[in-house]
Picture 1: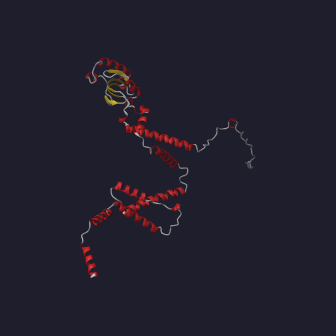
Picture 2: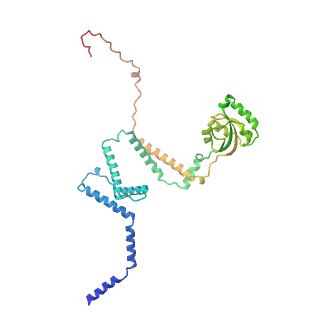
Length: 335
């Protein structure tokens, strides 16, 4: 009867529906099996097993001959491949990436062993850059507060000053066409169009054709100087808006100028340019950190330079040249 009871209990368990926790567990397992991370770890384990098999018996190899490829390295390779190709790498592709990294490390170490890094200006320059970047990264690690930035901005407002901006029309008088009379012709034309509006037909018919624009809008003095030359830009800043004035000389010749509008320069409020202030603050902090780090490193070394030439040796007369003694024929001259 005991056996019959046990069989009945077993049959009952088999016929019971699957409980909710068991279904949830099975669903979680299926989700986990679909996780790319699991596939990645399995691939890493496969590579590790392959490497261990191929290098069996070499456990006692000295540390300097070991090349460690970490899990972080493998993750970086996988992420880089997916960012480039928008898909996970195949096992063959992944193994090729690992071998590329190993090849780079092997060649780097062999190059060091041969002393190829010695007296190489490119290597020196790259190492110097890395040292500077390390020093600057110390400053970049500090995140400034808004109050810090405001205090710094108050002391450095002039760095963020916005320049004045000018909109103007000009009439060009070409020295190539008019020769020495270009300036006087511009002055005579000014007398004719004085009081005329900016876009009058009389003014437009007065000057010569210009290779670029007749009207320039919303330009800074720097941009005007690049276009017409510094002398023209300085003269333009002194002109009053609303009338034809000149003549003004440029790198091209002579001009009559009608200044349309002037937007005065100003210093913007902190809230307008807070991201720019932060960038400038960070740049200054990096520069200061680098200068401090270099000063400390420089103090460890003594620089030996060649001394000035000895004055007495420089002024001493050259040694007299040896006189040639005639040698009888058939004899060998002494050395």
